[in-house]
Image (cartoon, rainbow, N blue to C red; front, side, top):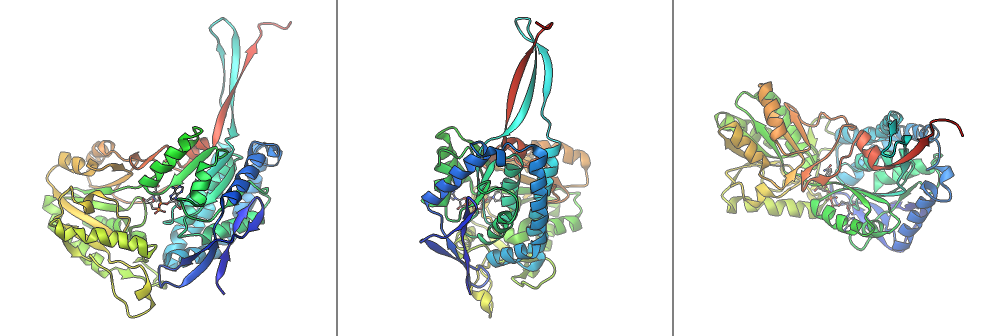
Length: 494
Ligand code: NAD
């Protein structure tokens, strides 16, 4: 029987007369029928969220002493970790990933993040100091971090539960109401999350789940709602810009984690074995659908041919779409419409003078995968730097490779993009790594690796890659208001 995924609003599971189908990108099978939230449902979630975070019922959540609230979160987090098999199954169904990948990257890691944020909140300081004011008065001020109210958490599909956890966890820890709008492509693991919250001591309304799309649907209803106090969004840069416009009405806070066109610089002294291992992951992991994936590789001319040959061999041998494969393998793209977009850009490569040394097309199968959204891991050389393939984010398993002659040119090539999310530097020369890293206009640079990442470290992007910082303390700060109270200290008693 097909699963029915409902909205979870103010403590109740809510159906809708409007539904949509979630189909598997692996074989086109129906995964679930999803109930799309209406504007009235979103309004109910927001109204109840306001009550329990900063309104008349804040004694149940927003006003709870931090330790009491964290005890509820720790308890819930343990129950979420206990459901890890269901989270993995949900992720595999929505994205077509293998067990190997789903178990490594999303479910358990996301579940553990709730504990991580609770731990980080304990050490978040409230500041205080004594001072002498302008008129000779003495005083003391202290800050107290209070919930902002209702936080809209709008998520993409690429690492669905992890993205949700990165937004919902800090919001709840700081006493807000979190309203989660997962991507229409990945509604399943968010529903498991809601089930665990429904069974926990987190009060009704502190978390709601609304399913649907962006424009004219749950995403737009939520971001436009005047009682949403802050919006944390991860997705495409264009969508982020639209959301920012909507948030300007009422001057609501935004945190935007957006697209990228990440570069890797391979210098002449790089260890090619490490490069090959790291760049196989950075270009092709999750079929290139990680925001930090490398889509442009600039390689010192003296190692260019060696690099291209080695990476092309690897790309041509990558296991595609075997759900039982217990090693590096790649799933399909998330949907046929996303594949159409990636394929259309691949098709522009020859007309701009580039050539594929690996992939460039759609693989064929003689089984159910023929109905999936698969694409070949692809490497192209010879494309000019202003070609659409080099400029636009593809969010697929694609790599543009070009040579450089010196450090200065390498830095200029890496920075020649509107984006500024991530970069990799491959070199044995640590002075060079320390010299080059700060010159790359990105939020996160890896040296001799990719995605070794503490999820509580700052996540930010330059240019079209985002606004604000997420991760650890930064997300806790975004999710709270540091209220200052100043008290006068009299010189003596009256
Ligand atoms: P998307 O922008 O199409 O959608 C993201 C979410 O926004 C979805 O839930 C969608 O329904 C919703 N949405 C769309 N239009 C909306 C609107 N007008 N108002 C409100 N909500 C709206 O992005 P996607 O295709 O789901 O995700 C892929 C993108 O996400 C890529 O660009 C990728 O680089 C980016 N991404 C960035 C990071 C990061 O940390 N910087 C991480 C992961 C993904």
